[in-house]
Image (cartoon, rainbow, N blue to C red; front, side, top):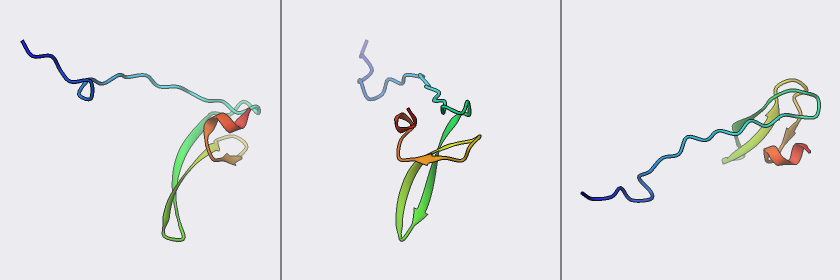
Length: 56
């Protein structure tokens, strides 16, 4: 029987990030100046960074 390709396999792993204030970090997509921009924002303190690992 044929094997599924590595691209067809899905892995369901989610990682939650938390800010130093204790709030959860969510990724948001913004459309500014004709460009799509992804930012990470803390739900509690509304701090924004480029990626979740920048909150440390």
